[in-house]
Image (cartoon, rainbow, N blue to C red):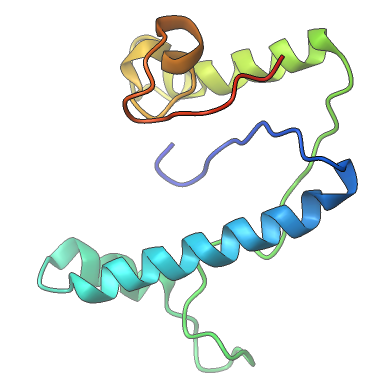
Amino acid sequence: MPEHFHLLIKPEPAESTSRLMQELKKRSAQGIVSALTENQTHSWCRKMLAGLRLPPTVHSDSRYRVWQRRFYPYGVYSEKKRLEKLNYMHNNPVKRGLVHSPEEWPWSSFRFYYLKDSCLLSMDKLV
């Protein structure tokens, strides 16, 4: 999705979800800001960086905000619910009108699960 993503994880222990998300958001934000900063010769990078800039009234050590402050966890406790969430994630780009079928969205785990394609996304299959 252009402005968000869905992540289906099984952290061990389950209580580590918050710490895992904190690290994921921190490291990916640093990488994104760094890449945009290094490539400001491209107008879209300058535009993206400007959109992430925090206003001077925000009391923070950070100059940019890539992610929302929190995440919205949803406990998945059954195989039925796991498949429901996975199907929702796979069909989200179709529902949004970005592609005609899930296999057309290159950043979807659909390609990994159903086409055995891990060229863009390699992952552990949740069972």
